[in-house]
Each structure stands twice: as C-alpha cells, then as structure tokens.
Length: 503
Image 1 (cartoon, rainbow, N blue to C red):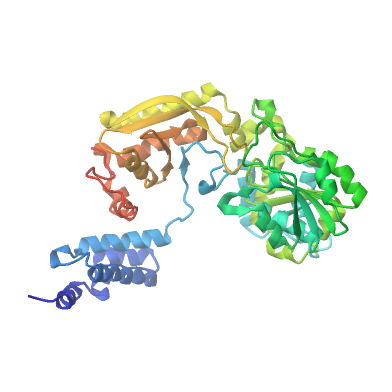
Image 2: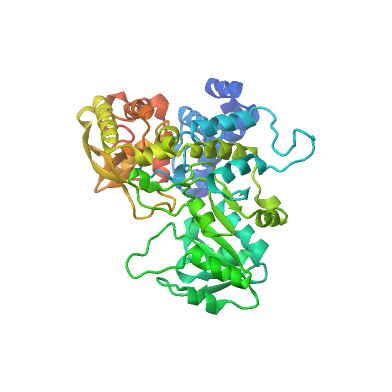
C-alpha cells in the first residue's frame, strides 16, 4: 500500500506545467487581451491552489484532480478578479440610503460633471489665475460655504474625524477640552470620540451624566488650563425621556467669559431644516454658526450627500490657524474631492429643488405612492422572468437613512418581498449579490426584501435582467460560470439546492 508522500508525489506529477497551460487556446486568448505576465502569474496561482489542496488532503486521488477545462476556468476567474472593476456599480435594494458598504451617497449629476471637468485634463486646483502663483485649494468651495452657512471661512479635510482631530489639536493641544459624557459617542468602525480626543493631544475633561448635563457642570470644570468647549451632536443615537443638554448659545456666554473656543462636531451635516418635507428635525449647520460656535465640522457624504470628506467652517482667524497646522498636509483633499464637493454644494443654493436635483433628497422625500408604483414595476419584472419559482409580494416597509444620520427615524416605504421555491433566503440573496451588477437586499423572516425607495427608476429594468441571469431556465453559464459557485463555497453555504439556478 502506497504511503501518503508517495501518493502526493504522483498527484503532483499529474498537475500540468505552467508552459503547458499557457499553450492552451483559451489561455493564449487571455494573453492577447490582458498583460501576459499577469496571466502567467494567474496560471502559477491556479497550479499552487491545486498543490495546496493535495497537501491539505482535499485532493486524495487522481479522479479528484481538476481537468484542463476546470483549470482554465480558474485561470479566467483569477484574471477577471484581478483586473476587473473592483469598485463596480451596485444596485441598492437594501433600504439604507447612506449605505456605508455601498459608498454612502451617490453623487448628483452636477457633482459628476464637476468631477469630470476637474479630472479629464489639468485643473487650477492650487494656482491663482491672475498671478500664476500657488494658491489656496480651499478657495473653490469657500465662497459657496459662506453663502450657504453664513460662516466666514472654511477648510476641507479627508473626513470628519480628521476635522475634529485638526480642530482639537490646533486649539486644545496640551490643554483641557471639556465635553459632556452624553456626547462621548462611538461612530462606525468602533471609532470613539475619546480616542479621537486623545490622538489630537488635548486633555479630555468629562462633565455631566449620560442623560443630563447642565451649564453649571461646564462652569465648574473650567480651570486655567481649559481651552475648548467641545459639543458633539449624537447623530447616531437618541436619548428619549429624562434628558437635558446645553445649547451652543448657552456655551457662548461661558466661552466669552473664560476665553474658550467652542468646537461643534455636528456630524451628519444637515444644511436645511428637513421638517419642510415632513421628516424629523435635525440640527443644521447654519444654525450652529448663528448660535455662536467658533468652529463647526461635519461629514461631506452624509446629509450633504457629496464625496467622503470633512468640512470645517467658522471664524476666519480660526480657520487660518488650522490651515497653518502641520497636520493639515496629512488631512488635505485632492482635486477629486474638491470638485465633487463644489458640484454638490451648488444644489443647496436652491433647496426647494433638492428632491429633483439630489439623489439622496429624492430618496428621502419621494411620495409614498411613487415608491409604491416602482415597487409594483419591480415585482412585475421579477414575475416575468422567474415564473412560479419565486413568490413575489409588494408590502409596506421602512427605509433607514444609515451612516448615523437620522437614527431611529425610519422613512415609510414599499418593498418587494421574495420567497424562492427551492432556495433559502440566504441562497437567493447570495445569488443576487453575485450577479453583474450585484443587487444588494436584506432578509426579513426568511424572505428576501428589495426596498423600492433606494432603487432608481432606470434600475427597474436592470433588476429584471439580474433575475433573468440567475434563475430558472434563463440561467446563463457564461455570466455565472464557477465564480458564483466558488464564492458560495468560500462563504461555507451548504445545501442540496443548486446555486445559482432556481429551477
């Protein structure tokens, strides 16, 4: 009886050589449309995967070895995965408007046009046209932000955490920054306000309790080493009931008496009062300036609906000091962010038209009946291609704003609820995520849910095509091949039902 090492040597000997696989017509074709060295590397990787499978015992006999066709398919998939579009388009049926995993806010057409203008050729990012000398890259959005918020000046950094660090480091380095315990929030990715404050170099002084903080708490905490009064909008959670916080107006009087700087992290960056559309109230950026904050920071990709960045606005002398901070070079943004932000800000000059001009405001404010009609169109498309393989219902649902904006304030919606005859909800959702483009959904009570509020009108037909590509007799092996199978196996999804076909 052969020992394991002998069997493994015999199996290794049966694996085709790199040169042998490179001579196959399908692999030669890959080399004509892709960099030859990269294809060769993918061939080597596919061989190494087989060798590793033998070492791990997953391949124990010759009949377990992949044939040439399977190896070629593995090579094609490796090339596709490596050279394909990583940030590919996705369809958001998950019912989260600012979906962090899907890139948060889709950019408005005006922002897309500005981005194209700034990136297709050279642009005047940091050059003064009159003198030809080096200029301030923040000037491109400064005038727009002054007009919209009433702030004297502004600064753009790569996200709101960077904005808070920069402000605290500039005005509170080595000195005390006083903050309410009820505002020491944790944002996404386990990133906490106390951690941000520590990294900035300021000394955190907590006052009050989780649910109640009074002006006298701040007053009692002020010492000769105090520099900053920090207020953080708890945008990702709400305290209901026995609750009290100190307003910026109240803090303004204390700051003037003691010579302190008020920094307000307002988080989501609402520019206008959302109650005009029947949504819940959210503190706005212009209000923070009017109430007396020296420095206000917020995200560019939340309720502003622009690119990921942090926006800092406030008194001119404060902004000038932050511009001179050595950290500014590490936090500054490039032409992509500045141009897309400029194209987004222009929309807020005409706030009444935001539901027409801005994607996230369309989703937030769209009438229920409009969403209902879209849901019915989606349901009809799915029924057309899936027949009796999927039970399709249109039901009431809710859409979440996401990304810590408008927490616990869902927006009423209509959803398409799906139950496959031969697939679990997890399998169906996986099949849809592995489509091209991927369709992201959510699962509720063993049913796959597609929220019509986060679907655009021009995506309804696309959804029909996605279902046609992964269900029933219309399954297209050229679109799916073994890539879907491999991804499912990596996720350790088991079952006797066939993936991705439903029939």
